[in-house]
Image (cartoon, rainbow, N blue to C red; front, side):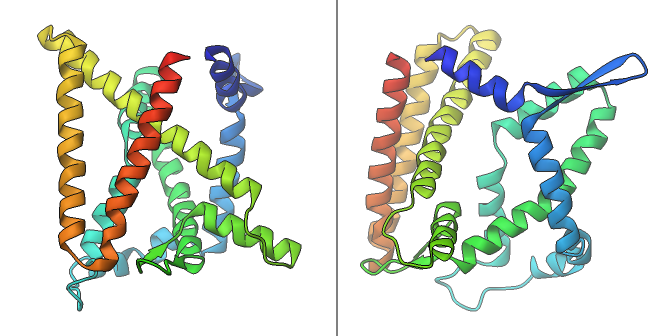
Length: 252
């Protein structure tokens, strides 16, 4: 299993192309070749949206919501930031500065600027292709949904399942489990190195905190509107599947 993971990592992040510049070799991985041109393309197609819409974004943060059942602009910003900023953003910055020096900060700014347009396009597609839940109300959306719609458009007929959309959802769930493991490992290692606390104790505390957060989410969803009670089922199902995958990966 570890060999498969290493092989996939090397395929995505290994040096696909090596450039020699004044005696220095620069390796360019596959994901950089895919993501940077994509960011440039979307930045041009959206007419430099991160710069053009920045004043409007700042003004929108101060707006008050009209309906108490909806999220305000600021709340939406916090939620979207929480879904995008993670361990990779924190550890990646430290690793980049450690390896590349202060100059790496500039290239991270460039990548973030180009990635902003890509994130905007992703969010827009999710809103355009979201589906209303017929049983509980509310909406569902995301890459799996607009990938499914894209396949339907290409085939020019309605389909129940799209293999590539299902594959994306499965890989997303596996990545979510992997990120959770990385975060937990980083926290336990930090407490062990700083305070000599055994990892098992830190793990138990993290599990209790996670259970408390999920219990609170389930409680408030159940006490809220009937349409919000789907969160109760979502939390149980996703948590159960995630725990099962983590156990399987650990055993393998």
